[in-house]
Structures are given as structure tokens and as C-alpha cells.
Amino acid sequence: MKRYDRLKEIQRLDPERDFLEIYRITVTYEFPWDITRALELALYRTYAVPSIGRLLAETAELTDRSQKRYDDTALLLDTVVEHGFDSDPGRTALRRINRMHAAYDIGNDDMRYVLCTFVVTPKRWLDAYGWRRLCDHELRAFAAYYRTLGARMGIKDLPRTYEDFERTLDTYEEAHFGWDEGARSVSDATLDLMASWYPRPLAPLVRGASLALLDDSLLRAFRYERPAPLARSLTRGALRLRARAVRLLPPRTTPHYARQNPEIKGYPDGYEVADLGTFPTPGVRGCPVRDLAQPPAAAE
Image (cartoon, rainbow, N blue to C red; front, side, top):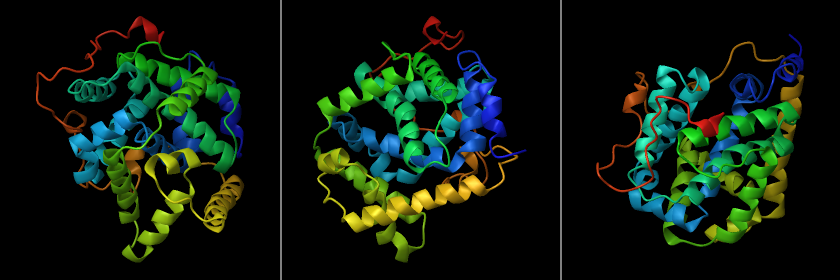
């Protein structure tokens, strides 16, 4: 298999009908490392919306149990990618996601914004640091995949195209990014978590590199000092050099799922999908739990 053969395979598929297959090829064969980094950044961006960052601080999941929250989020989302929306594991993962969200009063606009970050941030990351850019088939498949996920989560007024997702994200961030003390604590805890994955002497370097990847709107929202131009240049240059090296490598022959990532630390002996995540106090009002017995019409 040659370097661009999977791209040719993707372009033979229908992005509206075969969106799961296209998404799975893209994230597990073409860009597993990059998509992991991009989705980390996508979730991190959401903290800069005070209503989201404040809620995450109040639950203490990302400040007191950062590694577990990271692991569970990655594994639940990964289960749907690996097994599909209508498989038993996929449906179990979706029920877990919905029941966790149902414990809190989360507005539809915030939920939709978070979904938008999953579509837009990977594209922008790969534009800057990927060994190739996403093709139109992939962008359409990403939009269809997350439109389906959003419908299964009961999110209303979903964007349809990639351009719609991008416009919704940019508009929401412009209107809502801002300072919140709790959100800053969640941000700091996340940066500390990422640094903990490396030998302790490297922690300051990892934190500095992480901050160098943030755009100015995030730095302002969290009130971080703007990294020095040299730090930004070195960090971003290193990622671009990596992309050039990856382009020269032979293509991956087996899929790589998030559960195989070394950053997943909490389940050395395996896990049950039904046991992942949090189990908040029943009866708390929040967003509705969808009946997943049949795919909703909005997902079609």
C-alpha cells in the first residue's frame, strides 16, 4: 500500500452514506496521533466559555480526577468510532454519555458548541500540522458523523455542513469566550495532567509547549501571558517537521484506536464500557436522555 492509497479509498466512498467508515479510516489509519491532539485541544477550548468551564470546576472531575476524566471521555467516544452507533458497545457508550450530561442543567447552545469543536479543531490542526489536509469527502463525513452523534445526544438545531459547524463555532467563541476563575483552575489542571505524562524534569517544557499552541483568544480568556515568539516558533516548527517525516513513512497497516494511546493510564486490566464515566445523583434536572432504541430522524 502506498502513502495516498487510503485517501483514494476515501474518495471512492459516499461521505453521506459511508461517513462512519470514512471517519474511522481518517482517525485510526491516517491521523491517529494528530486527531488525539486535536480532540484534546477541542475539549480544552470549551473551558474558555465560562458557563462550561465553571460547571466543570464545580463537578471537580477535571481538577480532582483529571486522569480518570480524560480516560473515560476518550474511551467512550472511541467506543462509538470503533464499533459504530448501532452496535451494543456503541449504544452503551452513548447511554453513558447522555446520562452523565442529564445530571446537569446544560444549555443546548453550549452542547452544540462543544460538538462543533470536535468537527472544526481537527481540520484546523491538520491544516497547520498534519502530513496532509483533509479532503472534501473527509470534511463532509466529519460533519455527518458529528451530526449523527449530536442527534443521538438530543442536541437541537445541529449544523449540517462543515462550513455551518465552523461558522457556529466562531460566532459562539466571539460572543462567549471570557474569564472565569473556575475555568482557569480546570485549564491549569489539564495542563498539569498533560505534563504528568512525561518525566518530571520535562514538565515545564511540556507546559510551555502547550501554551505555545494556544491562540490569543484562549490566552486572553484564561489570562495567561503570551508565550515568547521563539517558544511559539520552535513548538510549531517541531510539529511541522514531524508532519514532513510522517509523510515519508509507509502507511499504517492496522488501525490505532484511542484505547491504545499511552496517555490512557487508568485501566491497565481493561474496562467495561458501562462502568466508564461518572454516576451523578439521580433525579437532578438537566438535558434529556434520548431513547436510543431507534436512530432519531435528525441523524438521517
